[in-house]
Length: 264
Image (cartoon, rainbow, N blue to C red):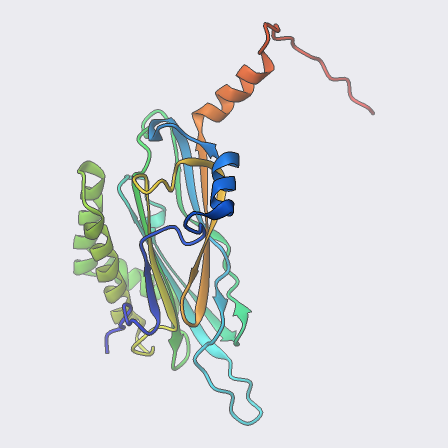
């Protein structure tokens, strides 16, 4: 049976920043302290990190002396409009004994772009799907699943479509459709799993929405019914280095080289 990733009971699709309330004193204060980036052309680096997902309910009832541990997979899919995709943009990990109110031991980069001489165009769209899936039987070797996936003809066709996203202006809906199709193919190779995940979130980070307009680290929280997901968006811009130099030379001061003597 195919995995139903978009089941409304377990899945949430976000279309606005989840960590920023609309209006109010907090939002106004954030605007004042955030380091705004005037244009996306000044971006020099973008990183997206997945923090440990919090499993509130693993969908397993305790039985007698058994505490109700579950065998879970965590599937992550990332699609963007640049060629610098991180290791195919897909990752799958298995965890054998996870109880209620536990974090999955995941803290990793799932997307990374850094400006260089040949790759100077920053991303305009980064789309993510994260899903925690319960396995009915023993966990399968995730490396074998990934190998089977990459040999799948339908998957290879979809990856060709992803490459085309980098060379053309594609609407957000195209990338989201690719993500759901890839998730369906992964579900075909997972095998012994439930027909619906414990929790799934889909979110898009785009320049139009302003997700890359603030330098530094911003945390986003996405709450599904049984799993809470957190991501960090890390943005660097050329203006940061230029501003530091300008500040040091203001008021007509001259640049002075200082030699530091070691203390021991």
